[in-house]
Image: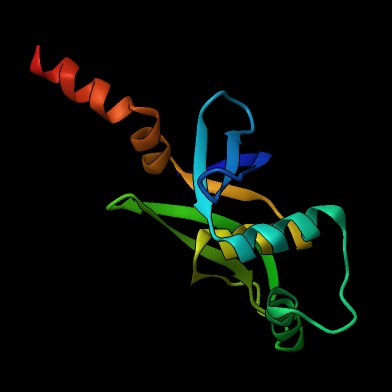
Length: 143
């Protein structure tokens, strides 16, 4: 099940060169922290500030291609956590109304979500894994 999230914070840590996106469950308290690269952090910051470049940047190009082909970004999804790496999808509605899931790095998906003002979702299984709910359930089963 997809759970809607809100981007509540982006953090830049100068000492370790780490950039982090903090997502919080829209109607709850669970949090997901996603480490992102420097360039994605810069583009995300610019998207949040509404900065528009004279010529299209990579993320703008993706939106332009979707528009030209009759598609529309309707959301982004973090759908898997494997070996401490998040995996994501762009949720794209085609001209005939079908919603396709297009493989994407979550960091790029977040930039597009902020640019296009579309919802961010995280799969319930991913939320459980990062919040420790699965570990709690497993230890309860052991008793």
